[in-house]
Length: 102
Image (cartoon, rainbow, N blue to C red):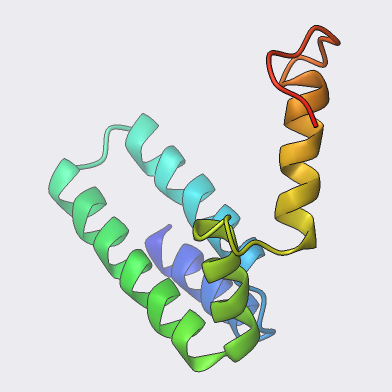
């Protein structure tokens, strides 16, 4: 199963599509965890996946910009600002009695 997961993620990463790769890795690791996999292997897989994503983002300028826009929301992009507006207006549940709004 691990060989299929690694091959699938590698092929999707060649596209390059970091978002889909991260979703696939999360799904594979969740299945591994639920099926009773060893914690040490899970930990090393998480570390290796994080390092791979980091080096992928460094090698692709557009991916690095998207990550920095996400984590540095004060400089944020249009998408981050729209997300904050949506949360301010309705929150996660869509309630119209939002605590803060703009």
